[in-house]
Image (cartoon, rainbow, N blue to C red; front, side, top):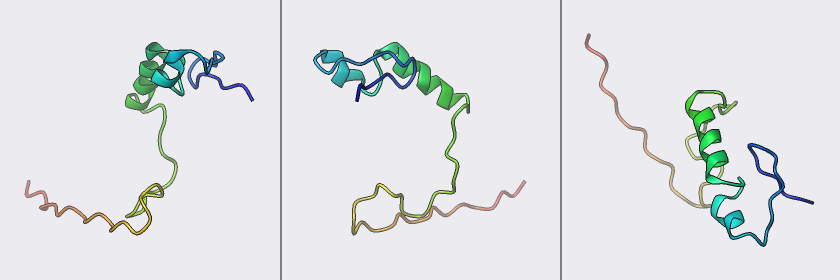
Length: 73
């Protein structure tokens, strides 16, 4: 299976040193362009996040909720 850039779909070459540097993108331009899409709310996570994320290490303690003061305005 050929790997492709997640932004522009250009074929990635595993022998190219940039492959590891920018993976899963072909260049810094594509990497930053997709990051811009996240910042512009073009992408979003489609499900609620649990207390402990799915990628947390097994046996890791759940993160404590931060206490917020009610808005007094």
